[in-house]
Length: 263
Length: 155
Ligand SMILES: Cc1cc2nc3c(=O)[nH]c(=O)nc-3n(C[C@H](O)[C@H](O)[C@H](O)COP(=O)(O)OP(=O)(O)OC[C@H]3O[C@@H](n4cnc5c(N)ncnc54)[C@H](O)[C@@H]3O)c2cc1C
Ligand code: FES
Ligand code: FES
Image 1: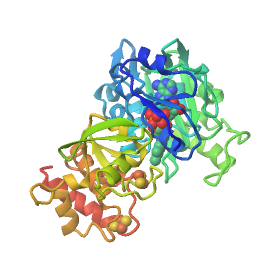
Image 2: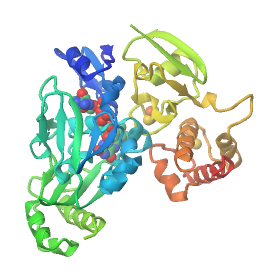
Image 3: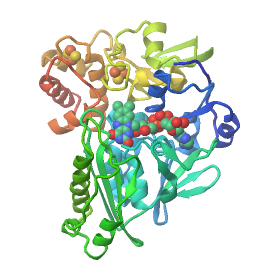
Image 4: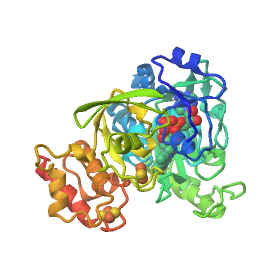
């Protein structure tokens, strides 16, 4: 690790004041500390969000579950409110990495990082969530812009994510057995605005499959997507699986997610 | 340099460290508590697991500064007055270790899992120990030991 200065502000305003230059935010550190160890980043200052109480917590507000950016994966997995309102989200959080990663890793860190194999981006896109920052609110459809890329600007801090409560939702992941990241993960939600199907792990970033959404709109059952073919074009190919294998898994995982959502 | 203060195994400690110091480096090099191991240094193996404010974490993937003000427990803090913790006794009785390298991390993860699942099934134990890798035992006796300890601890 290169050396850096360390700050632990007590409020979001204070954190914003610390940013600028080569300063970087630290949340749970489960991605960022390994990055620092490999000297893939060289911040001159680290601003640790861990001391900001207002960034943690889970609240049900009307027809949405609102989760603070610094809320750990383990807290979401264990939350009775989340289990009641959006059980698929609690299940997704409980399947991230391992217990020690879940005890440190945060919602905001995962969303800001936008790893193409991460779980949370599928839930945000699948549920039509919105990302709240210190500056604005961004819909999930506009937030994830590419591989490890998001709409976040410099000096912008995610404060909370608002998840609208769906009528039903399910998540199924084919996990890489070593890291437990998604080789392919599919989040399916039945919402008042229509069915949403979001895929992670398969491509360079999380994406929706419109043809499945249309097929499911009239008939919310696993059989409804039998006629939808998923192209391998543009999907990831690596030592863990070819693009064709991933394309096949998308349909298998989508069917499992539909079944988990009661379809 | 920055000043870091925390409670480790019930004792208050404080030191001037470089902010890039990892929690595991602080524990092993500053405090000379070498029961916490470094296996992979890449957040995979769990040999470095300690408790920070009661939750198990990988101390190779946390800065010492992040634990400023926290209560940390390492494997050295498990026994009381020379009496082994039930999880240590169970690993001993059920032969839950061979070389012992993974053991400190296994014990710390096991205590956390028993706290959250007082009466864990074999499946739960295996799922919960996904962050701890053992190259010797094949896990069978580790699972047995965790089950026995959970019963002993009142599950
Ligand atoms: C062994 C292992 C297994 C894992 N398995 C999985 C898995 O199965 N599925 C999965 O999805 N993930 C997995 N992860 C990643 C894990 O979920 C991380 O916790 C997550 O990607 C990053 O969250 P963090 O809180 O640790 O963020 P950090 O590592 O602290 O930060 C990550 C990035 O986000 C930025 N950032 C953090 N918070 C904010 C904020 N509030 N606003 C703006 N920017 C911010 C940071 O500056 C940094 O660039 C795994 C990690 C490990 C080590
Ligand atoms: S040394 Fe920390 S996880 Fe392996
Ligand atoms: S006993 Fe040798 S690594 Fe587990």
